[in-house]
Amino acid sequence: MIRVRLKFLTCALVALTFPATSWATNGYFSHGTSIAEKGMAGAGVAFSQDTLAASNNPAGMVWQGSRYDIGVAVFAPDRSYTAKGGPAPGCDPVTGGCPFSIGPQDKDSDNDFFLIPQFGYNWVIDDDSTVGISIFGNGGLNTEYDGGTATLWPAGQAGGPVTLPGTFGDRTAGVDLAQMFLAATYARKITENSSFGISGIGVYQRFRAKGLDNFASFSQDAENLSDNGYDHSTGLGVRVGVQAEIVPGWRIGAAYQPKIDMDEFDDYSGLFAEDGDFDIPSNFTVGLAVDIGKTGVLVVDVQQINYEDVDAVSNSISSLTDGSCAAGPGVGTGDGCLGGSDGAGFGWEDMTVVKVGFQWDYFDTTWRVGYSTGDQPIPDDETLFNILAPGVIEEHFTAGFTKQLDDDSSFNFAAMYAPNKSVKGDSPFDPMQEIEIEMDQWELAWSYSRNIR
Image 1 (cartoon, rainbow, N blue to C red):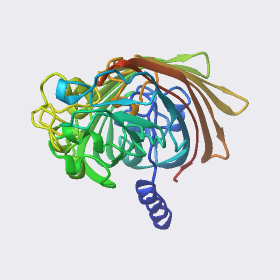
Image 2: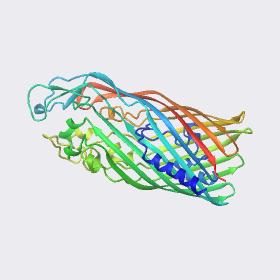
Image 3: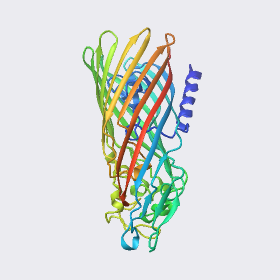
Image 4: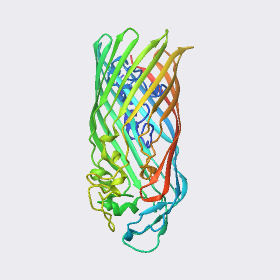
């Protein structure tokens, strides 16, 4: 027994350091973590089914018994942008003109496939309580645009423009953000049909940006704006949850995770607001699970993601053009500059997601389908900077199943498709140019589960 536990704790550490780099669906939060919940569009705050339940509702862990789950997902996002129109005439900084104009061009991001691991292990303490460990990815972004051109009017110089290679005139442009969570969970039954749980969460973030040096005149720390390789950030947080059967066959659930303060990305203190601060926004989920017939379960969740908690994500790019940042040769001054105390960001708004799933048993297999929808978080006047982070997906269609292999083990599968969604708006740096960002996604995920006796 000790050898088995050590073996799978080793797998957990491997999963934690696995180089997963992108899982952006609801903004940059995953649409779901548990393979069972993925099959139902991420729904399950009132209906937990495996040891990745802690990612949604820690209270669900007490109903899982002693078991482990280990899995992986293949995630494939298709990201692109289109720049039409421009460059505007007379864009010269001496006369108050435009810093740059993109293309015009259409570009697709490289890096189309990502592996995302997960691991969970739960131990029964007594008849009423358990402890567990869950390791999973909660969010991320990855873009890499090779080629293209941008037209720039060099800061502080009169005369004509120059055309340089790259989306922003600085060669290949893109960002790479990955987040991995380790949740240590204690869950306890309150009554025979209700429970609460609490997870202490350790978070690891990795980030890299490149191809952004031509924003230097708008950054308060141009040396830490772009092309500094990977930087790392850690933080500690908590997630709490409850589940209860209110009448036979009707269960409710709720979970809340306050904002998690993260270490700053020092190597990108000239990009993200507040000297490189990139925290995890608060979020909460409430939901209902209702038994349908002998084996069916209908699950409905409502999730709120408070992106406006994080200035680096929610501050508008307009602070670079509304006088909050005074551009200069090689450095900007003012709180609205990139990296400033109220620095420009991606302009994201809070996001509410409704998730509906249904599962039923047929021929010794549990089958699942799901659908989720929510208004994407990017306003149409924020598309320029969000070329780097086109988190515009609004719908997910999912399906999956669990096949029992023997009395103690099972194989789980889930598939997701997110249809194309685009957002377009005018560039704040070229009034003659319209920029459209778009994305579609698919994902296939597998896991193996085993009860420990």
